[in-house]
Image (cartoon, rainbow, N blue to C red; front, side, top):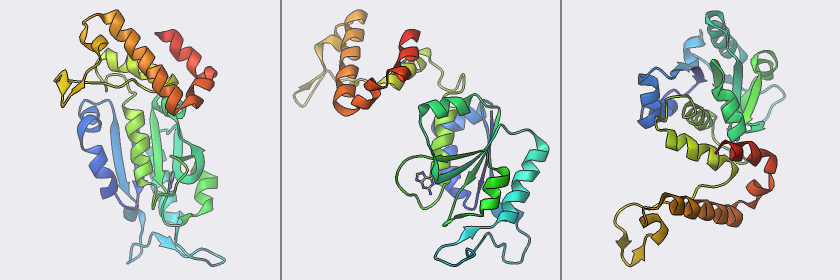
Amino acid sequence: MRIDIITAFPPLLHGPLSESILRRAQEAGHAEIVVHDLRDYTHDKHRTLDDTPYGGGAGMILKAEPLFECIETLQAQRHYDQVILTTPAGRVYDQSLCKQLSMEEALIIICGHYKGIDQRVIDALVSMEISIGDYVLTGGELAAAVIVDSVIRLLPGVIGDGESMLTDSFMEGELDCPYYTRPPSFRGMNVPEDLLSGDHARVRKWREHAARTLTRQRRPDLLEDSSRNAPERKKK
Ligand code: 6GU
């Protein structure tokens, strides 16, 4: 899968993309992620990216020309399945949209910034607007990093062991159970007996019960949404 990210602040993306699982996914060839500096697509002396909004008001708007030039340059090189804009006005991101994006071949993600971007970019070039939740970020870079992280980890081979993927599909319908590692007793706090038993059936029962209890307490909405649960449950 290829993802091109267009941003006025490339360093905000470099950190998240160059560590841990995302770095390994790129090194192994599962994902090619290219960050484009929007300033490379400006032509004036000051490399101007933004301007004041027509009609007045506070805040600056990303100009249309550099975004058009950057996106059209990319689209001349290959087909892109989606041109995504990160914006609080977008569709709220969730695991089902994440899954859908992970099945695409190539994506462009435009990081929204400042007060917004020129609406003509959205009208002419953007196919999907995504928000990562009901709060406001200073810019779309962190949102883009969240989308890329969640999509890349779903690509075949990125999270190697089958066990994680199994837990993953389980997790979509409800929250995951608590985990413990050595030592079995720490400052008077003990690991639940069932987990130490070595009895796989007993461990599985404990985990299913703990996951269900936690979900009921914290996120009953996940259990109510049975249409989302059913297909995942069948897989197990
Ligand atoms: Cl995608 N962008 C910004 N600026 N704020 C957000 C967001 C995106 N998603 C939630 N808040």
